[in-house]
Length: 125
Image 1 (cartoon, one colour):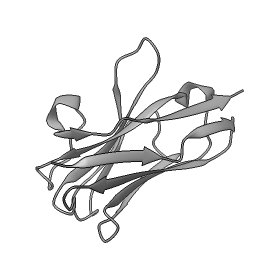
Image 2 (image 1 turned 90 degrees about the vertical axis):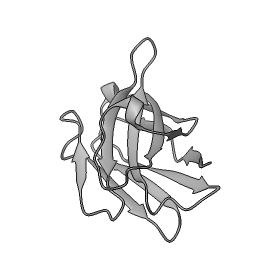
Image 3 (image 1 turned 45 degrees about the horizontal axis):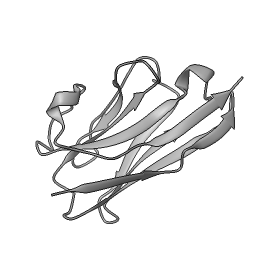
């Protein structure tokens, strides 16, 4: 089992930045692909960014490309999401997820095996 705990969310003004962290426990995530998703009230969970086990490949939703950066530190069992130039439409609960097939990029919720509880990000205009 893998437990994931997100942190780093908060309230920020439009144009600001936040760095989210997702710490894993239970087992090493160095062989897992990792992803970030977000869910706003009344909306479906949507893909934000993903990274393969080595960090060699990343992929982003069009809505965040050029503003967000996903990275990982396997030694710390942690994945990060650096969010810059935040917009009010980025407001959501952000969740990290881990998939056993570490060499793949997954954008679909159902391909991930473990999920964190999420951290709230609120961007004011």
